[in-house]
Length: 441
View 1 (tube, rainbow, N blue to C red):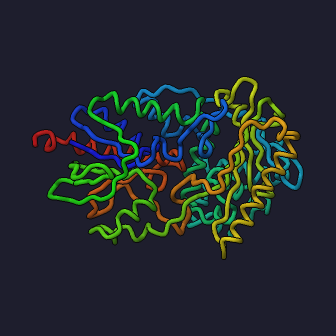
View 2: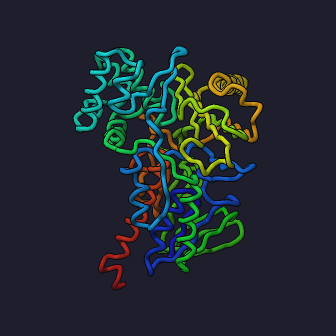
């Protein structure tokens, strides 16, 4: 079987890595960019390792990446963020983030009675009996809940932090999605971890595994421009080659790009339900210092301005030169504006608020600044997992392709959905290949 994978990000590399293990499968990964990794691309600048977005892994012991580590023989180390150094800021007051029972008891975000109520909600989520899963959205659950306002605000803020969206959008996340996500996270013994060495440690190993198979190749700077079906074969044309024949094609690119590329094809109407799905975009503000400016905590979430700062180097020492410090600020963004001028003013205000947060907790940071990067519209997920959007299934009836990525159906959110959907697609193809009728044909 000969397979084409379109897209060399986390999903595309994962799918190809699994498929490359089968001796009867060969293929090509097509990536339009000069480098692999997609939105998990990592690069070096002045001795600092910068990621396009966060590389934290939530609930790593229950995450698909742990299955991949075992199944694909990946080697990496991870380090857990110190829960006692994670704080919330609200009305200029700092308090421990309620990440576990001990922190819940110590936090000032909730009153004593509210803490009891929230512990009960956590227990119900763990036991998989929480009523949240029976509501279409978090907002509808909160509207019917008798919990105090602070408990409701905490739920919104937790979903903001893990789904990288605003409180308004958090209220639109389906109740089943939240219940399943936090069921796994609350049961995890390692809720927030960093892969030491960033995403490059994973993507480099996936690439090596694909290329070492001897049956697969990776082609960068070669976008697929058109395709057609001829009999049982799928024919691709790229920027540099024509009439490349494959038995199966996997699209591992953002859903918006899939819908665009399917226009004026026989399958265009199948993608109409997914064409208007919105992406999750954030402002990312990375700053690298020549020395440790301050280390009051490892993570601070500003509940008033809906942004947070991670001291990435406090958990992952590999991302900085000796004695250096790397902070990553992320602001959740609205995406509804009446004009470009309104959007620009909004983004400028978010940038200013982030710098004010740096000023407040890392005074004098500008004097030690070595690296600065501001990405004002960084995509962290191609489909925002809210009720008004639909995740693209891994297969569609009557469509001869497979689909994976963070905008497709899979386990978890963000990077985990990219990993899990790619793993599912690869296993589906391999299962079909291993059927007796396939082996005898």
